[in-house]
Image (cartoon, rainbow, N blue to C red):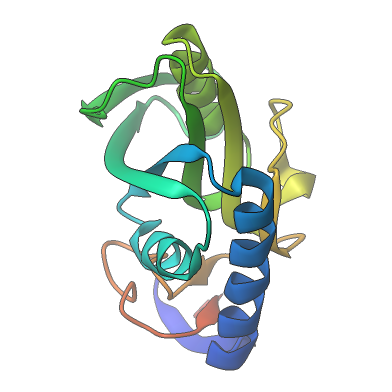
Length: 177
């Protein structure tokens, strides 16, 4: 895909405000309780760092996971595996998974089922962007930054071919035809 332009969807101030609101919601929920916050790499790193720096109340342990999906993108027959697994035990702990975007739900369904099988006391999902309309598997975010019906987006951790993650805002990619 050749990119014609990047059209801003959410600016830095909108992101900063929404992240602060989400952090307040998360803090209120876990107030004073131990929490394992798990960042889904690579895309979730900016959102993750911004959220956990704003948490007040919970005692936070931090870990990271990276997943790979193999198969034909247009089908739901995907094989998902860990490239990097968490190092902390999740048994008996409150776990907050922090992800950049959720669309079809296949990857998050896999990850949440894996973490549930490891005995997490509770399991919640925070996503920066939720594309509910694209959902193929019933996965719901507990904390959502923004909902988008469609469009291919980059910036604030989201990428196209490993590029554009560093952008401080979120942009829709307008392809050149």
